[in-house]
Length: 306
Length: 298
Image (cartoon, rainbow over all chains, first blue to last red; front, top):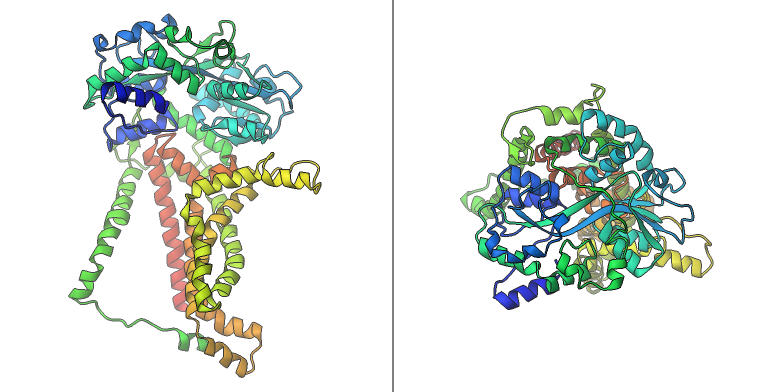
């Protein structure tokens, strides 16, 4: 969340906001469930939102306090992880795809198969996220990214056994850095990272993998027992204002789910293929997988550790 | 060996009085709060399980330890965690070895320098601590990356035509570890060298010993406690290090520290992370006990 947006909210309402950052949903959950700190507002992705709703860890939103929710594009309401939209409000979405430095890579790369065909050995950065890594193999094998069973994982194993040794760096925090530094020529990264690269230099092309691709939806939600629920709702409502939402897009060029805010974006922003992929790609979202997370962790650790 | 025994100063074996205990109270409280209690929590967690959300469920199970020792796919004894731990130990051993080779001469140079220059030299050793180790590690990334400072310089001076791949290799991991731990080795060794009585060295020379013999029979035994302290301070934390190894190694071949950290954050399997942590603690304790026993019997 850009500091400018937070300062603007404090200036207008007098409500002070203290922010704590985390690198992943899992880290956020660890902090939230450890119970050391009491948060009024969290930003989980779709599969984490789903798990939190299931576990009864979220407050139901009072939508009367959030009239700006009408600004959301229809495809971002009533989502599978929160079918009635009672617990969470999407504020940012994006996809995971392939970035190619076309100044270095002359052969076309259309999907995971091309990326890991052996010609780009040790020229690849990928997200350091075990569930992501396994989802690419699942897509490659034409399974749904949520079809995680002992059998499908067993099928993923030989694929990843071939892929992972070709990776040079695992980085979830800032994979664009390795691409900019020239340490690697290709990557599987968050679309927002790719959008920043594209903005810096058009040679960094973003491709949604031909096999399948998936998208993530980051929402705002209020954890159970939050002390300042009403203020949290005020903040959500503030974020949904088009002129505020645009500032978030300026700082983090992911896909903005706010239809009114999109109207205020510049032509260049809308033309960035990483932020707003052309056409109407079919994108899957992750659903909560509960305890199978353990099997995923084991699979990837076994392959990486050897 | 006779020389050894006569020089060694054994501390007075006396029971501490009430005043002694009183002085030790803050230390004991500190140890209880930050060592004993967390270790006890780890021990309890290591026998628990995780639920769907990754919360700890208090349901007794050996499962976590079985996962460390027995491969669930093959049913054989020995798992990937052993390989990972062994790799971390090798990194740490190599780091400690290089710290010994580089650090001892530096500590000697500082310890034998004129007194007024010693403080300046010590300050120079400590200056890196004024910034976070993460910032310093990022600085190394800027230096070592493919289009980084070092490669640009080497190419500019035509020493190489193609950039060297330095970052994200085991070499980079060890470099990062050595760079970060070297001061921790120098300081305790410096402490024992500074206390070294110069007249003993002179006596050794007067009695006809050459430089090598003097070093072997006088200097090394007298500075040995500092060296042991340095080795322990470097070797053990280096095994568990995760930040530097992740950033400089690119997460390709994870260290045991990275795997444990991963259990607590990404995998959110605290019980398994706790079991891995406990196994390491027991391993360290065994090594320490073994070396302590050997020192006594020698």
